[in-house]
Amino acid sequence: MKMETLFRNSRIKLSQGLIFWREVGEGIPVIFLHGSWHEGSQWVPIMQTLSREFHCLTPDLLGFGESEIPDIHYSIDLQVECLAEFLQALRLENVYLVGHSLGAWVAASYALKYPDHVQGLVLIAPEGVATEVTEKHLKQMRNLLHRSEFMFTLLRLLRPIAKLFGWQINVNEELKLRRQIEEYPTACELLYQRQKAEIYAEYLETRLHLLQAPSVILQGGKDSPEALAASQVYAKSIPSANFKTIAHGENNLPEKCALVVVQEIRDFVKSY
Image (cartoon, rainbow, N blue to C red; front, side):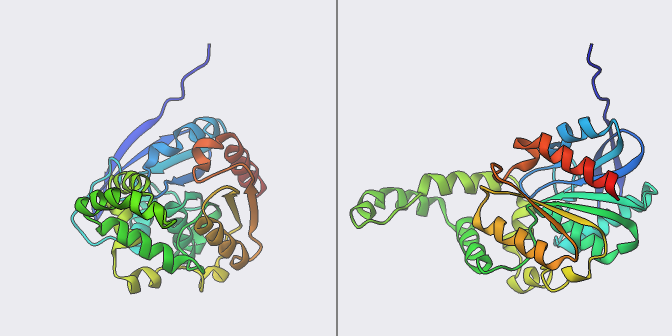
């Protein structure tokens, strides 16, 4: 009979708020940081498998999931400091960081600030760099979040007229996306709703060459142009980074390509 993996769920009070995390396994510590539109449970299937070999932990970032959602101004540096305080409280020093999208941005930022505490980085479709499509994407997402329900209704009414002129209005898809991302207000703030100068100041493309930790970047071949461009910046900028494309993967590698991701993490951790 197959044994169920027993997760340990815990909470700890940090200076900025209460952090919740899941933990399983023993051995080399591997910290999993969730993506923009997720929380730590995103990693549970992968951690179940890797717990036979490693000590796996996944915190809900401050403002996400079961962690506290304080009414404060969020930034990437704030998440980095929360991660640093979390790891210090658990007396975890030489760790491997595995991050997806926003979590990869936090992981890389942490490794730049605390290089002596990071053994290696696995960055999956990482956010946090400026590319040739960044400005357009940022503008589109800001407009989407600011658009009123009345405007969505108006666009839906105008869609037949627009079609006559060859214009395409994807109002239903945009409304669905808007409702999905609004479930993660902290991610919306970090990625799109802060002052543009502040967001750009935390982008990493001018600092990635300083990363000392061994790194592998995983990218789905069928992901968005924005994600593909960002991963390429990471791959070109980080010294000796290993860039791997999963050809059939889209924007959800930890969920849809879990077995491939597990193998990549296992091989990477055992190699360094």
